[in-house]
Every structure is written in structure tokens, then in C-alpha cells.
Image (cartoon, rainbow, N blue to C red; front, side):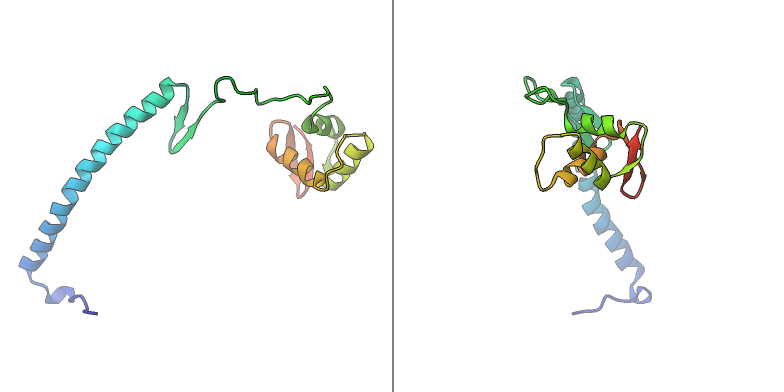
Amino acid sequence: MARSPVLSEITTDELEGELRRRLTALRPLIKKRERMLVSLERIEAAIERAGGLVQGRAVSVGPKPGSRPIRRKRADGSPTLHESIYKILRGKTMSVAVLTQHLQKAGFPSKAPTFRVMVNQALIKHTSMFKKVSHGKYTTV
């Protein structure tokens, strides 16, 4: 593999030639970028007209028309897991393991082997209802 020449070994004409070559390659890329930015602005405006929200690189979209609401109720009318957690945890601080035991004693209908994981995920997901106090311990907001 050939070594690139040391800067002191390159003539001024060679340096100027290299700069011209790079500028020649750079100009079309800059123009292409500008065209793409204009296209991106049009797309983002269309997203916002359709009800989406564009923030930096992130785009958030609401639920699809006709889809189920995000806050679903249980078929039998009983409280959801996060609602049951809130009732037990209100005004107290508990670990996930203790909270899981309280839910089972209260008769929450779940015999899943991953019930403790489900409780942990509900605590993490519903940040408007629950706050992490320390490692593995949560309370209500």
C-alpha cells in the first residue's frame, strides 16, 4: 500500500489542484442537500396538516382512525392492573415484590408466572401515576 506524501513534499500547485477537485465534488452534494431539505420541510408540513407532530428527528402520530382507545377497560369491568396498583400503593412506598404479593392477596386475577414482571412494567409505563423512590421501590405521584 502506497504511503501518502508528507505535506512538505507536496507542491503548491498539487495542493491547489486537490482543493479544486474536492470543491468540485462538494458543490453537487451541497445542492442535493438543499433540495432534500426543501422536500423534508414539505413532508413535515404535510405530517402536521394530517395531525402529526414533528419534533427534531422524532415524529409522533395519534391513534389510527377507528382504532380502539388507548385506555381500555377490562371485559368484565374489573379494574386494570395499573388501577389496582394505584389503589394499593396510594400514599405508601413498596417494592415490586411486596406490591405483587399485595395484589395477589387482594384477589387480582392473574396466575401468570411473569406477574411480577407485569407489575414492574406497569409501574415503569405509567409515570403519571407512579414515581420511583429508590431501586425497586415505588410510590404514587
